[in-house]
Image 1 (cartoon, rainbow, N blue to C red):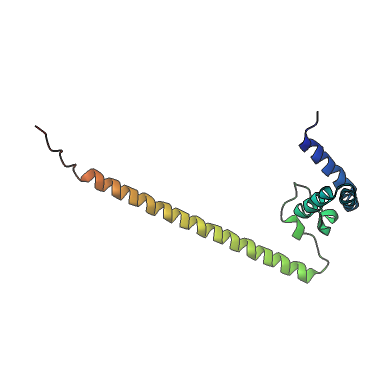
Image 2: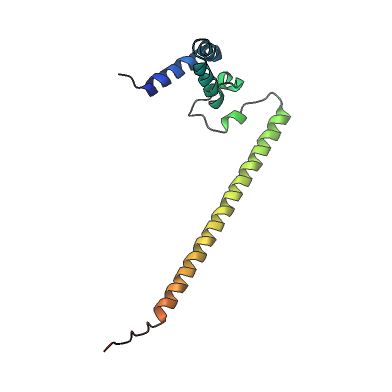
Length: 135
């Protein structure tokens, strides 16, 4: 017996395979037969970004790296060089910022550890006052 999530994912895959027109037809039929269904499909299309042109035009596979989109040539070598240079600069800045954040975290950890050790040393070195004896 199929579960609702299996049914939904298979319907979604079926519509994706047929393209934007299938999604639009499903939405229109939803509005015609029962308007909340059409509205739900419309909201889902907007939320999942299926309304955008790029969803149906280019869909990279999951194994494609995040840098593959900017390795394609735009046809303009000057722009491609500028884009590659800018992306390299941004990646270098991101790496530098991440290392800066790591140094800040390390310094904070060291400060907290030193404070703990100082408090512990102070507690150990100060003798506990003897409790008064009751007779």
